[in-house]
Length: 108
Length: 254
Image 1 (cartoon, one colour):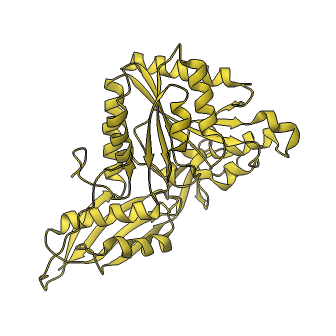
Image 2 (cartoon, rainbow over the protein chains, first blue to last red; image 1 turned 180 degrees about the horizontal axis):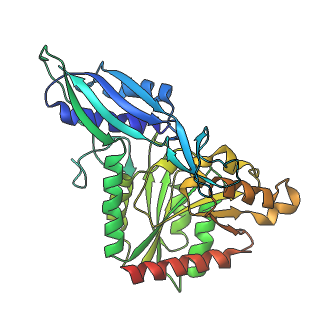
């Protein structure tokens, strides 16, 4: 359940920048290969936000699909798992889908 | 408040002491106009920063830090016990023990004569850079030594958290099944070395060694694979060579 640590990090980052304002919405990017479950993260976020400037804020999660680049032929391919092989047999290095980013937040 | 970083949880105990309490912010009257504040920051930035601090701390003291991870029961503590006993004349080793509860593993390590600090994570499922920073404050590993960090037994969560270590080692035992690398790919991708433990039990279990290694390399083609038994000592020599070599390289780089 590392989503609890991830949620705590999001809440801390937002609360630090809120400087007295109330946070209404938080937008984050989660890569589909980042080993973080959006539903579990929402659940943890709500709990971690309690008693902070982020309490009650909506968590908007933008999921980024997994993408790899073949080491041999350079082709780009979709990855559902954090590893994969190209049709040519080459190993696919991950080039997208590992994001764990706080984009922005709405405050009032 | 924590002097290292000013953050943390009230559940984490280093040597039985609460490391610090969490602060909560309250506010009374929100302004009516909503506006967008751009953050554009890595969610794990704080952990990464603390990990870099640890890495600098280790490099400055010529301490080679290894993060050992596995599912519970793969034999991490047994590997540590044997390693300490057999290398103690050639390499000073100290240990950070991570577990949700008890100091049972720290007691086992203490019995070998090595210095050890137990970190209890409470409900936490992994060590993070912050806990390690506090752990090494208590442990104070000597210059020119190896620090073995035994992470919480878990093949998922520890993979995400950089501790500032120079080597990441995952342990799998032959009693677990050769499909572990495909079931927990994040861990095998995050590590540079795989120890396949309990090879003395191979005659009694259905475990295809070659398939396990192929599965692991499918996830991480660069993975170094060592086969050993902490029980009989078979194969431990190659692990010691790796540790001694890596520690010497770390000294040269420092």
